[in-house]
Length: 241
Length: 334
Image (tube, rainbow over all chains, first blue to last red; front, side, top):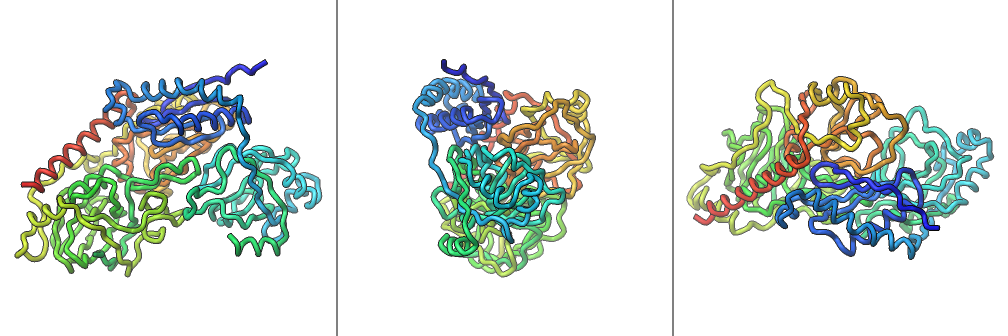
């Protein structure tokens, strides 16, 4: 039996954005619907569409009200909202043939100077550091969305046994590529920023590079796996990338 | 063609109308905090409205124009001087090569935008010349101007040339401003708070009624935690009634979010693309120019508007800029 469609709510975010709420909790099915709608919008952009921002349960659609006024719309918001609602069935229909996003492997050198909090995470989880690494590198994670910083992925799929509270005192500067845990989340810092995540390793890959056609290494909908590497491999890969 | 930076000013960055299309990758939009002011200045020098100019913060830079230049200033009056004389805002100003633009003590606190005919021709990054300081991206090497920088200037439009020749005939030396000006949008009166109009945000109803009332009635002061990303405000504490964490969703320029401490943050051009704090309000695009003037110590009052009114005000602003562009084109053709 097919699941009933998730609840849908539309609301404005200012005069130039419509937010579609397509679910109420973090769930792969909601993420797939958001991805499917993003693809439908790319193929059939309604007039005035500027860009879209997928998040856990929402797709925010930015538009230019002027374009819709010039097309004779009395209310640009209503016009855009109904255009989006008309495209929703096509997105739901596309879910049947949904193909998972590409699997991206992220090499990580765990522990040592790259993962100063690995021991703390291990003692919190009552595991050995090697077990933490094994459990962190085992799952296939899903990139739900990018935000917080350019190229920063919000990942789903962390082993619940690894959940660790944030540091009481955030570090003034966390290097780009640092892999951390905060609560039930794991993530990768994409830019050097202050941060309070527990750092367990670092990747030599650049998550965000404005020189690339697609500056973010990861896109919403991608699958991700962490691959443990040695410090020697880290140094070698740092020179390649 | 270039401009030499003799003094950089407090925080002077190259900005255009922002970097669009990459928010889904977490890349912030950036761009001028008062896009309408930059567009106005660009129109006044015959540029495309999206050309890159300079955003000036409180203390402006000292710049030497190495070739003849046509410039326009919009925003706050930061005390611009050419050869010791005050430079009017909102007018095209023609200057001869070698002239130095300097800023004295600012008349008011705030920001201003400087457009030059041809635009600041730094190489675009991902479709925009806007500087995003945190990622060291765009603008001049991804950073604010420094002493000794040379700013490249692009080719002028025919309108720019005609305006220059009308304002400063071939035989004239020094500099001259046009006798006409663009109407400047009203800011706050002296001593009065900046009134910014806003729509209720997606999570507005989750706040206690007394907090909602306080938000729309009381005055908030911009704290020292204020930059191009956002401004933390101090004022009455705002309490969210609903419990439970929110899931991160989109935020934009003008989003007023309220962290657990109860003091709101109004997000500006360099804000993150998504956030997890409740969104109490959304300042309308037509009033971003007022937010852009809200440096530490500035006082703000939020005034509620409906969506239809906000969209009508957006349309009115676009029509005003279009009318200005037509008027300037006619001035140049006369």
